[in-house]
Amino acid sequence: MAPLRFAANLDWLFTERPALPERLEAAARAGFRAAELPEPYAWDPALLRGAADRAGLALVLINTPPGDQDKGEKGLGAVPGRQAAFREGLALAVKYAKALGCLRIHLMAGRVPAGTERTAMAPEMEATFIENLRYAADILAQEDMTGLLEPMNSRITDPRYFLTTPHQAAAILEKVGRPNLWLQLDIFHCQIMDGNLTQTLKTYFPLIGHIQIGQVPGRHEPDSPGEVNFPYLFQLLESLGYEGYVGCEYTPQGDTLEGLGWLHAYWASRGRQQRRW
Image (cartoon, rainbow, N blue to C red; front, side, top):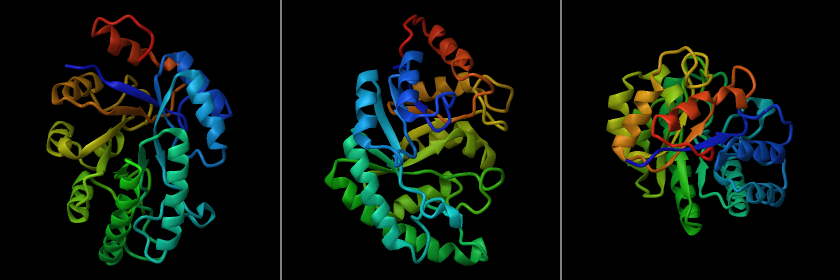
């Protein structure tokens, strides 16, 4: 069984450094070989690519732009009436992904509009999402890129986010019917919404293109106190033959580097001594 590959999410890790290029360097010094840059848009992509190349880091995931954050937007994929803005954001994401050498884009679904009810809006939002995903899949296919759908929990993190469970995402992926769209499964969100992680991973494994981790309920390091047995889950993913990246999307309890003992323990348990993972 091949060991898992971990990527540092630089919106969450190494925030001791204010600038993304510095975080890239810090991640590489810590031993990472890959990084997620969810929101790179405030930076020149050539500058980020240069910093990543010098650090020896692969950039493996970005998000589509969130939309108008002053108006509470968090993605536009499923938001009725915002199709034109979604396409503009997708074009920008593809431009950045190409410059960064990144082949995966998280296509953010967005929130149920304020002042409306989820159940009433669900049919229209799903139809909008399907329309936008088919458009996105065709654009991404031209660049040999993958689009990802990430369910986010509505119980703690975002009560109005549209896409909330792997079951909902799988149903939408089936309706869209494009081979370059996959499920992005965040263990933190999945545990809060569904639990039953073993069966969920086995059931949806054929659809999974990317995984992210964070302990529940605090969203800290995998070895912090919480509900999830990550050593078991890592072994399960290995046994399933998972070959993608595992994004480290959690809030360190203290210094990022000092909190990486769980990752050292993972490698030590597999008889590996090298620092680079």
